[in-house]
Structure formats: structure tokens, C-alpha cells
Length: 161
Image (cartoon, rainbow, N blue to C red; front, top):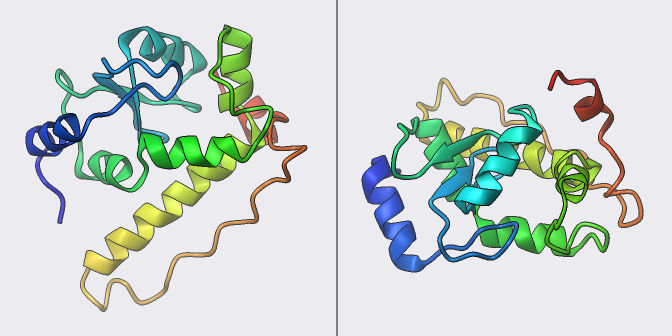
């Protein structure tokens, strides 16, 4: 059961959330793509990456769709951070635009996006009528290896900026 956006973000604020990239506790923006929170400065940098890598919304000023709220519910800063921790070349907070681009245009980030897509599809199918949810979503491809996770995702390189 998903709450409306005001209730959802009020609960999230009460639980506390920090920026995925710099750790700032003042994270009133989010990257819907990863379901993770951002501070205003990092949100600006994410906007520069392009929506194909990170779609950014304000948790206080923007309208949120049900699907976007589901991504926040099933993603989360802690979950994404734990995933990034498994990749030595992506775990450090990005200090430069190049490091930010490396993190979010990486094979590992692309894998996380696809895995979150599938998690959201499964959650939607579970709430749909049984006739509509006849076939389960496909399993995600294996995660990239630790030594290749930081490499650019070929799909990201060919996407428009």
C-alpha cells in the first residue's frame, strides 16, 4: 500500500534521510531513478547528468506519480549505498563531476536501475488483478563483476544527453 506523496515524504523525513552523494542531512530532493535522496547541490549536479541517468524531483515542490513513489519505497538511499559499497571504485562519494558521471554512467549503476525496475514491476504485478499479472517479470541479469562495475555502461554512452 502506497501513501500519497505528502504522507510518504513526511514519514521518510521522520525516519531521517541523507544525500546519497555527500551525506548531507538536508536532502529534500531525490533521484527517482535510484530511489535515493539528494541535497540541493547534488540534485543540481544530477540534473547535469541527464534524465537518462538520473531523473531528479523535489520532495516538497514537485508532484509525484504512484510509480515514482514506488521507486522511492523499493529503492532507498541505504539500499543503493549498500549496493555501491560492493564496488571499490564507486563506493567513495563523488567529489568531482567526472567522478559523479563515472558512478552513474557505470555498468553497476545500470544494473541497479534495471533491478529496481524489475522490483517495481513485481510489486505492481502483486497488487494487480490475478488475470493481469499472469506472467512474472524476468530475472535481472547478473551484476557486473567488482573490477568492471565502474566501467561505462554501453547503453548509457549511446543515450542522448
